[in-house]
View (cartoon, rainbow, N blue to C red):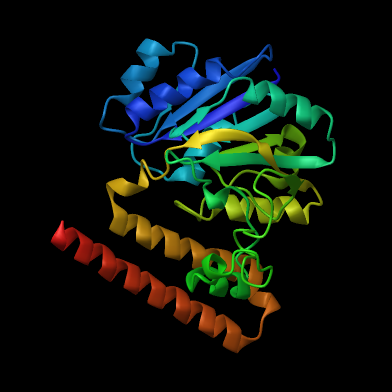
Length: 289
């Protein structure tokens, strides 16, 4: 088996249908297996998979177990030389998967690779290549200094705004919507950290990959369409909580020990204030909708 593809879905039936259809046009000649883990959807997603994609291996969770835990359920069953974590709100270009297998075959020091994610409006999803969210990188992102000074290495360290979006280079992290890795990486690093319900588990996994001395490669010459937020828009307040909780977990797990107490204190205060501010903004938007 060359490639195992794992997709976790929650109430994204039509997007999932388009995603699974796009896999068939992108696979080339490689042997593959496809897993869908449904997080207790109420929109008929499991029935659609059973009817329209009989070769897909379907797992149905009795409740929404989050992104990390759901993906892990399938990851433990994969057998491919390579594994792809793929979001259901993505659509692959022709031959992308065949090309990624060829690229990884020729790059034995690369443990994990990602490609350019493009939104429906043609703009790049900036999360597809990232630096780690150190206090300084987070400061630049939260104050939008990376948008004011996109060519600055000082302020653009999180979304790497100073780097060529069409280039190919090593990065700290890629996004969980498209994570292509070799089995040896999975066996060495382990599965996703289930303390992250939604958000942050991809950054955490990339951090662990880098600590294991595998390279993480961004390949800007290849693209995937990303209709971002299909699941998260269903309950924005809950997703806001999960996002900021993930930030705290990541900082405490990986970064806290590298900084003095007052920096860690400022980080916690900053995350808390942003959490509250975002919650208020979402409430106001809902009130005026």
